[in-house]
Amino acid sequence: MRSIGRRFLRIWRVGLKSVYKYLFYLLITAFVGAYCNTPLQASGHYKKILKRWTRHGTAFVVANLEAQLDWDATYLSDEFREASLDKMAPLLAMTPTEVAAERRENQAQEGRYDEFFIGAYAGSSDWPGMGKNTGDWSIVLEAADGDAVKPVRFERVTITQREKILYPYLDRWDQAYRITFPKTIHAGEKFTLRMTGIPAKSALVWR
Image (cartoon, rainbow, N blue to C red; front, side, top):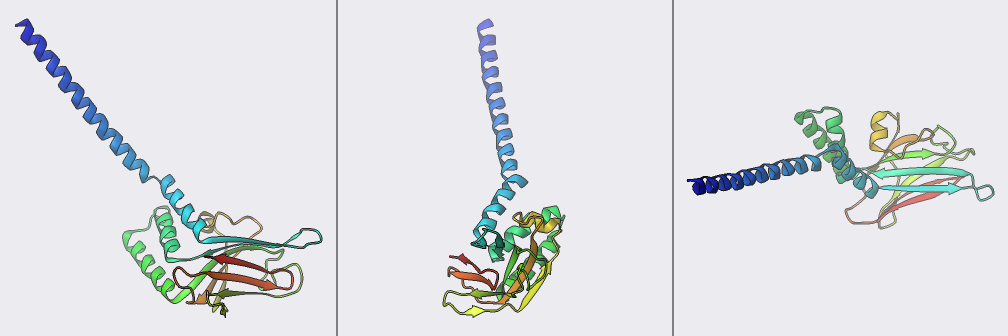
């Protein structure tokens, strides 16, 4: 009887250990799954896409190395629009209906226009006289074939917390703009955003 009792106890302990191992496995699996969907992971994904579609340029005065133009531009590609929506939807507590409507609007805009968000410092808060000198500034979009297209809409954007979250390159001296061009860019092709003016010139290239 003792032998049978010890054997039963041994089997019970082995079975109990197996149950503990299984429960531990389930706990770890749940933890990893939750971690992979944390805002931290989502933020890392957004940063990669932001970097992919953003370019930076600076133009200096040769005599004293004073910055005449310091700017960042983000091309609002379909991929970027989707990533920014994924980032902002939880923060704004958007409903599924609101997200779907925003997605449809983004797709409509991306199909008709090429849009850029720009943060720029040029010593002035006025457009188009952005520079410290009196020369006017202009901006054009050049497609792979070299044709230059002028914007159809230019908007000054008030920098709110939303802009600071989506475009962390903005600083306290920047002015923000949203520039819209006729649809010119084709997937996989090089394009250039070119800023020209008397004070300075700068070109940002996406390949």
